[in-house]
Image 1 (cartoon, rainbow, N blue to C red):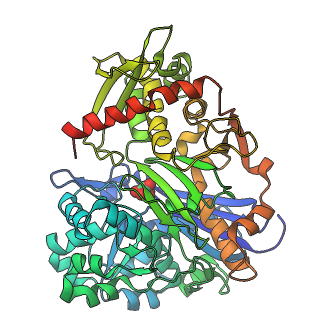
Image 2 (image 1 turned 135 degrees about the vertical axis):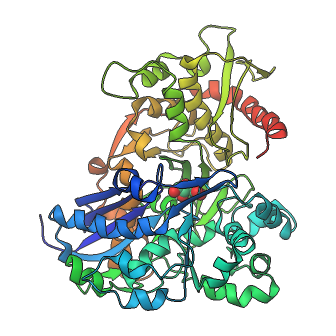
Length: 570
Ligand code: XUL
């Protein structure tokens, strides 16, 4: 191992806390993780990382479990022999939107941590609420309705904040907290996002909210670079705005630099250097776009508990059905995002209806079906195309309640869309993956263009990068290439399951090694990034003929969503 500074990136996701340590040349040095279900299910009564209150649509995680996980993941990292004293910078990511409600004792408890005792023993008094609402929470329809009308329309809210109202967005969650649990709201001295909560532990003080993650709240005026006064009034009432501003704190506009040195708790307990700096932590999706130098027209498809489709773009074209967020490192750039609740878990449900595979790979039968079923299950001329929606959870894009819908249409032009009976579990395997990719193609079509090096091809992404747990599945890569194209192919990031933590580690490196505030993330990381070490081509992407087959039914797919939206709105 070459000597030199190391950088530590975290990812506090729904199901795990991961840590990854890299060197200045971007090589991964060490990794560790806490898996909430495996490590804490019995103690915290969680399933897939969360508790739920179905009557109210609430989904939330115990904050104490997160606190305990920080000590545990660092213990594991140290036990693996990671040279903790060489870590010069820390950053990381947290699931977006999730909020932590600190009490008035938080600042003093964080400042005076005793390295002889676990974090949790010392922070029991630091929270006004023992839970953090999770991004899957859908308890805030009333609040969403208020947000969507408050500036005049959904589009007006999207123009101002980058997104129309969403159940999980923190502004609607805070408004509900004030109405539903006023005693918690009143006791709350500060509100953090999952990302700034984690940064706060390392800093030994409440860290500010990050400039990219703040755009997942429906409260930040993107053009004005400040809190939106009108939306603060909605959340807190006119009289309560000053108080809410205090709870939220100021937001630094720079995603780089240092927030301060690491708390002595970590120096004494885990052997960090007192020189180690804490850089701003960001959301998990913003961190994902930092896991590689993303070029214009490149798209990342993140296949985790949720599925997301991400692009880095200088154009700001907000629309109520998707999100624009501030880019985490590059001022004037945005992250375009589609976020689906029904990602990996929905595919798992279809998988589990198929016969158990003979081999060890639980995806064996599913993948075989996906690869053996032709596009849209059109086996011969004249066959109708199969389209479906598979939402075991209420979906975000589009805002449709839970259910499964199967339709067929004419394959030549998508006409004559008709509901179909159950066609059995086998076609479902391909149709569910196609439907996830078709939804992404439908909504990103305005952001893509003809590939500059192959202008004769239809408008599509240049490259598709797959990250997250699902990126390991070759059948899924194939279908995403078939549907979305990718003139230069479909690639898998080698640490595909750890993209957010890796993006966090790269962010720490950039934040602390940049020469000045003008050295961009892409310049610095791009120079050190060795494509052959980091990514693998997993599919050719664009296939002439196949891409067009999907193009012909894209209108029918949109019509199908609209039909269902009319009857099955969340
Ligand atoms: C994005 C979103 C999810 C979470 C997952 O808006 O809600 O992707 O960030 O952790």
